[in-house]
Image (cartoon, rainbow, N blue to C red; front, top):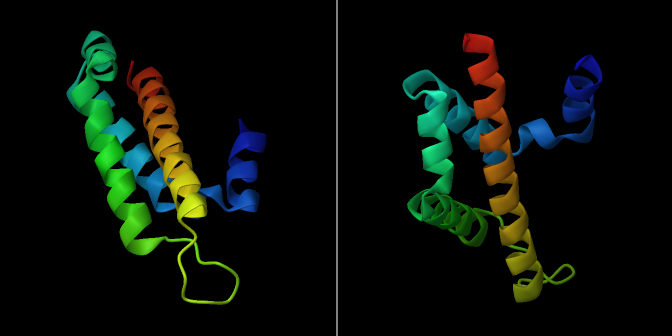
Length: 105
């Protein structure tokens, strides 16, 4: 576990806002809901739609990819970054919910 925490800090993943949002979401889910309700949240498509929208707004408003050193947006790179942010948000929420649920019980 210590190696995993060290890897988060040394790789810079812990500084990503999507990871922070996922950890806070997992903490909220584990604090407010039981284990069965958390499974129900992850089965609901609205949860994925909301996280999809959050990652979309963050990526396309604040974290776009530019071509070289110009002001031209690289749309393919931005879309790839968007899916990466969405995956990071979902994975960190899921893992944080599991982690905090095991700590609470």
